Image 1 (cartoon, rainbow, N blue to C red):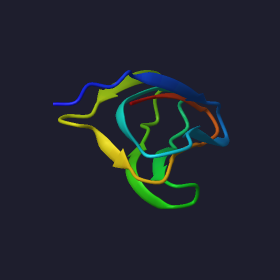
Image 2: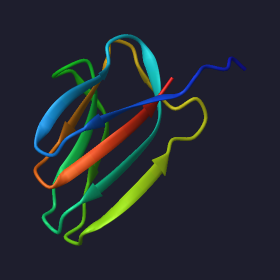
Image 3: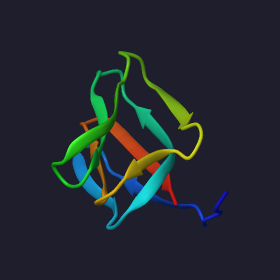
Image 4: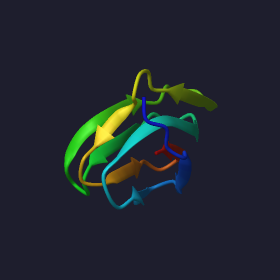
Length: 93
């Protein structure tokens, strides 16, 4: 098994952010959200294929998700879409 350093990048509410510009694996995501439901999406490439999507419930809370195995591969780059009311941090490496 190959080890890599894990880094993180944040996505502010109501924005699309390139968390990492290059091939990498998403290891985990943490986010907090308001009581307004919205979908947090991780794309492989800006505007590319969705590799993860989670619709937040209509309750204000925070959540941390650890992706099993080697994580989620993004071959192009890691693009994170945060709806209004959602702030996310993506862990990759």
